[in-house]
Structure formats: structure tokens, C-alpha cells
Length: 379
Image (cartoon, rainbow, N blue to C red; front, side, top):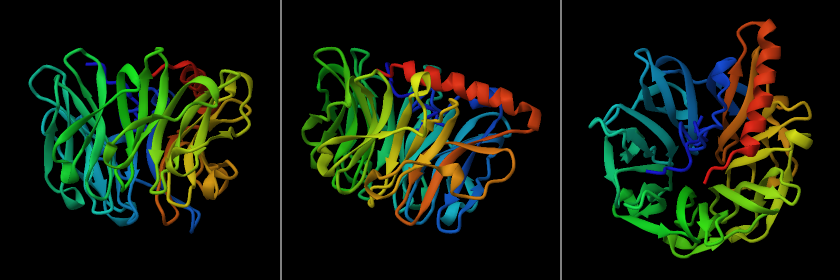
């Protein structure tokens, strides 16, 4: 199956797999840990792991509960949920050989996927009950694979499944994860869904009849897929949507750079969010999440090519380096932010530099990763 967004994603970062390649491969240079950033108190709290040495945070709700995944003491990766304000990390287990959580709603229902244990290396989407209790297999519409990337407060789940033709198509479910429906494409042979709001509007990316890939938005309950266009280039992807229908993601510009974008309500009008100073080869930024005030988070290259987490003001105004807004422990660099809620909390990935002499190596590695991400074709 051609599951498109293997992020380590939004680590992910949308989750070990979602954005594949954007979980940044930092572990080659430093430890990678998930942090809860509280913008009100300007503090950073490192999330507990499940016994291993790294973790990824993928989704956060308005109670500050976080979903993500971590390696265990035995080396397996398992989905986790935290308590309020990121306190305590609980293993959600798996229905197979491993599991990854990608999003969480305000009731604490978690969506993600697990690796099956039948030796086929397939993956199936899952949903849990409130507070992460009870993992349920959502199956697949056709083919052998599915992954869930987003969940709303009605527990509608959106993600991607594999078709018999070995393409991937976006899906949406009904409330509580019941009934998986194919969302189709923009005329090409593949699509995936990355975000969903409480009206059931879904965003993601799809191939077109011309062979390029474009960000899309649907109407309520996943009805009707619309091309969001680009910032002047040929390629775009959408990762997040708020309840007003403002969409964030990235798009190629006329100069072939990849820049984070925000739209107006209902996906109308794509606006370039720029970078944290990155130009030339370092001209790169991605937006992963947006709250109902229109504050956007993601990552951007700096003028020196380093990958730093960013946040904007309401309605996407003013991109700011998240590292500059809070008190961080020595040796901690926030490299990307994957989620933001409505009460001033952000989840971010951080590179932990064990020794001062490794700083130059880490920064060199982040520069290389930024260049790789700029050239990466996800679809």
C-alpha cells in the first residue's frame, strides 16, 4: 500500500509516520523528546516516555491532554495519552506489534494506527473511548492498510486507506469512528486526510489529473473536495484546520521554496506565512496546526539553516521563534511544533544536546534535514 504521509510526523511529527521524514531524523545527532509549552507561564515541561529514550507528541486537546508515541524499555513504539496539562504518560497498548497516536479530541478519545501482528507489515487505524480507554480497530475500506490522522469532538476520524490498486485514498468516518467513507481525489489516483474540524470539514492532499499534488478542503461531513491552490508554485499540502475552516499547511512558491500558509475561513485565500529568516537553500517552513483564534504552529528554517519551532499571533500574524518566548533548559532546542490548543498550550519536539561539543554537529544535521525536507515529494 502506498501510505503517503510517513511523517515521524506531526515525530510524524504528524506521528511517526505522518510526515515521514519531518520527525526530523534528529536522533542521529541528539535525543528527541516531546515537550508541553505553556505560553501563559512561559514554561516547558518534558513529557515522560514509556521507558525508552525518545517520544513524539502528535495531538493536544483543550484540557492539555496529549497523545503521541514513545519507545518502551523493550524498544517497541506504543501510543500514549497523558493526563491534564501533560501530566503522566499512559501506554495505550496495541492490537498488534506497535501503535502510534496522531490526534486527540476534548473527550480524550485518541486516533492513530497500529501494526498488525499477522506478518504482513500492514497497519490499521484505531480509535479509543474517552480518556484513551479501549482501542478499537477501524479496519479498512479495501486493501490491507489504513491510518487515522485526525479526530474531532464528534469522534469522526479522518485518515488514509489503501485501495486494491495500491493507491491511497482519504477517508472520513461517522461519529465515534463508525462507517469509513472514501473521500476520493482531485482527479488523480491518490489522496490522504490530515485534519478535521468539528463540522467534519476535512483537509489533506490529493493528486490531480495533471499529476501534481494539491491541498484540499471538503465541506461539512467530508462532502465535496475542493482544491486550495498554491502560493504560486505547483504543489501544496494541508495539515490542519480550525472550526472557522481556516487551513494551514505548506505550498511551493513561484520561486520553488516551500512556505507555510494560512487561509481565510472555509479555506478561502491562501496567505504566505514566510520563514524565520531562511533564504536560498534554507527557504523553508511548514505549518502543522491552528487553533480557533488562528494561531499557527510548525517549523521553519532560520537564516543559518537550523530548524526551529514557530508560532504566530491570531489569524497567522507575525511568525515568531517559539524558543524565544519561553525559558528552556540548557541544551534544549525546540525544532518543530505539532499542535496548539485554545488555552495557550503547544506541543513541540525538542533536540536534546547531551554535551556542548555536539552542538555544531547537531546544527549541521538540522541544516541537512531542512534541505532534504525542502526537496521531499510526499505524494
